[in-house]
Image (cartoon, rainbow, N blue to C red):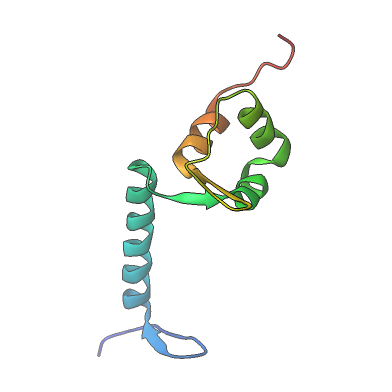
Length: 93
């Protein structure tokens, strides 16, 4: 007898193995999109993830450029934001 775990969601029921396999596939796709610079987020998402002050400072200093601008909305590449967030900042100089 096989010991299976089943997860019950509001709209369907799936096995744990099926759930983890689907989740791993989606994570791999997001990682690929980030590495290739294809994943973009809105300005409000960038503010939430990286802090409004930092994002605005990067824009003002020219280190961050929107990848796409539509009326009233800006989108940024997640890979660009992550690179800037990983740089150690020195605010005294």
